[in-house]
Length: 531
Image 1 (cartoon, helix red, strand yellow):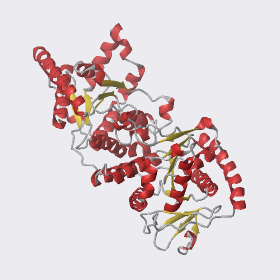
Image 2 (image 1 turned 90 degrees about the vertical axis):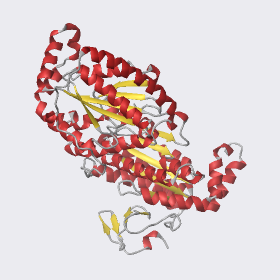
Image 3 (image 1 turned 60 degrees about the vertical axis):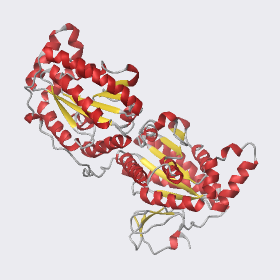
């Protein structure tokens, strides 16, 4: 029985509605149907029935058409600035690399990248789970083809017993969030699983091993897969069901015939791009926060009268810097990453605060990231991409002078993103910081608070002091005129993103010395908690 005869269906806007409330995507130009799991019907590797294979003549004719259409789509995605991420997963020996090589021949090599993602490198193992994938996402208007993906890493670790059940399910949750946030931010994510039988896989691996020129392509893992084929099917089915989402569904590719497999992939890519281009610019769903939050005061409720005497400041500064220096050694030995994020009003004293922190640290073990307007290559990717690229290795410290929270402050108020973008960002940021927390990072977020009069006094001092004039710009004065709007946005930001695992800490900075001491005390306290 072919997939088309599973049940009765009617075509509605390019989709089929099944009686059991599953939805399958139907492409008029092919005989392929793809079932979405999680909507009432489960079609798994064990149950999958191949669509009828066309004749060789029909395959050749349709391939010529599909290749030309795919080549034409490249200009359309460039014009619409649609980033396309194509995932090639499946059995070892199923022909992923061969099909990928055929597909990209239709494309202009200036506008795509291919990534072979096997085992993570030593450096990647010292980063968060999704790091090596997030930093490789495509630019707007370009393709990225992944030969292997997070599926291979997660399922392989599961089969090898390298992750327990809890870690495995945490990773599945991370993957679903990752794919969803890409889709919500305008990416097309197309996922293919290349499927062959156990006997076909064994035959192909033996053929590859028999030739000296191709034997290197057979890994130990491929042979282990074939030997434990049924065990792999169980884990793959669990993974495929868990990560099959409407915004990023799985497509099974019948890989017994390489030319037929190429046709399936090419036609599905063309149709997926068509649908994505039609949907470009549509608002995504704003998800409700599901993370526990800590109640925080509004900025207007914060008492800024706290001060510290100069003598006490000097004594405490040295004592705290010595303690932090010792802790820096300990987190390096324990491989604990630390991320310190500074936000605050212009002239609030962020730079001086950071300087007192870094004075205590070994320069080989930290980096300060001053964040300004995104560069063109950063604008052309997910807004969190530039921050994933700046995450520290375990045992190191990253200090951000302004952060990802620009999305819900400057970008919100200056119109650099849509309302839908910044409304979604609260949850996306909470998820990002949850990834860091799950990785084991200590996350310290500071809002450096001053009042409006203090800011004016400091602006005037900068304006009138030649060696400080570089610190003041016309933009600073313009932002000051929007103080009330910024205060409203900041209050909302702090309330919606002060989670239990990454709470905000307010630094009362009318007295800069007091704020510096409080920052050092807070960082020390948070690191000691983790240790």
